[in-house]
Amino acid sequence: MEHNRVSTFGGAAGRVLGESLSFATLLTTLVFGGLCALVTLAGVGASLRWFPPLAVSALVCIALSRFALNGMHGQWDGSVLSSAGGEWSEVLRVAGRFALLAVAWIVPFFLLAAASKAISDTSAPSAMGLPRVPVFALLYAVAGVFVQPALLVAAVAAERLGDLVDRDHWSRLFSGRMGDLFVLCSLYVGAPLVLYLLAAPVILGIVTTSPMSSILPVVLLVGAMMSFWISLYGRLCGFFAAGAGEVEFEGRRVVAGDPDPACDDRPIPPPPGALPGAGIAAPPSAPPKSIPLSGAGPAREGAVSAAACASVPGGPVPAA
Image (tube, rainbow, N blue to C red; front, side, top):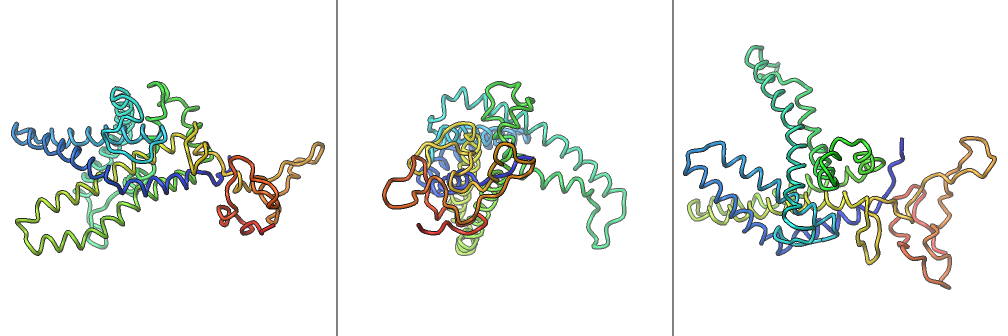
């Protein structure tokens, strides 16, 4: 199994998180919120209960695809109207691929949910009085936290529809990058959760002070947090997909999924003629090749500071 190494994606993801809290998010709120309001009003006016949820889901899918494309092309910030990642025709193609993958994942979950309801209706409740829900259905829902971003990454990185069922396509994107995927999921789930926790007292204060006049401020605040989540989620997936190509990171061109040259702790290959398995780990005291041994010369191009390797086993590189 391929070793999951420290890569440059973690630093890129941190910057994406910071850039998502910007004026562009407010512009996205106005555009995306306005479109959602229009389709909801249209569905209510036509007495079509199924139309607003489907239309809003389609808008979310398109917005995620736009931000994913922009992120894959190296754009750190920007609103949903930005075309840095390509034309809207390409966005619709990505959204279509993502929708196919999402439906293929969600349909079994709904079947499990229906089976769970049938079981809970015909069986006795659990010891705590709660309906009995199959463990597999709960695990399926939790797995969606990791599967959904992987589906968007695969959709935005695909060049054709057949790539979605191509094993080499999925292997190229995710082989040896489970650590990066964990970073992605931690940010797109954790950051909005923290934001909602911070906004909850503000929302409660507005509602309790003046319930009637608080509708518009609360709607705008919730819409801004939703836009922040869409921007962060989509752009993180785009930068993850850029692991197959170069992006700009800290003033240099790097491959987003490649190991950081100063944090690579893989075993040193054994010398020719040595017995199999004779490789040894790099000594913790040895400075990375990308860091100069003295102040006499500049670091090699693409070097990073020793402070970036503080988390590597063996501790930080000692000063020369």
